[in-house]
Image (cartoon, rainbow, N blue to C red; front, side, top):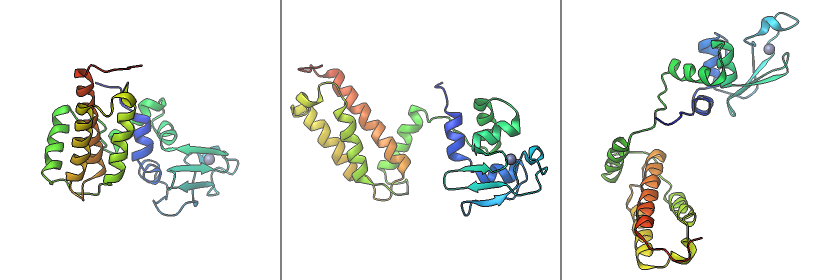
Length: 200
Ligand SMILES: [Zn+2]
């Protein structure tokens, strides 16, 4: 099991307004930046928390308390609420909001890719950015510069890029990422079989 990115994922996937409203019972919504509300630790303020000194910023998913003169991200608020260190607080928060960040297994990825290829996964796919990502990755392979035009490599690159063309127009970003991962593994497998020249 890889080390899961609880803190990053919690900050990305749980809304600051949801944490304030659901956990602390404070008025906050996912609307405009700078909306005024109460600080969860208003009892620490000189006025006991009477003034609405917290500002909520849905755009960057943070809040700022003018009395505390302190910026809070989602995990900061989770630490406050669960009274436990950041990583554990982030994990508890994800559980509380029922967000599963376990990465898909190889079987799940392959099944998703099959569905993608069969055109069953809806969504939006930017094929241009996917092609760029494939080429950017390929350039990081050892000896790419001197080997990119040998038959096997050209053939592989063309197939991968043609595969992008074959993807449905409405594919999801997630499926785009899955395709990229598959493309990487195709290159890695090829690289294992090649007798490369001029490998640095
Ligand atoms: Zn405060």
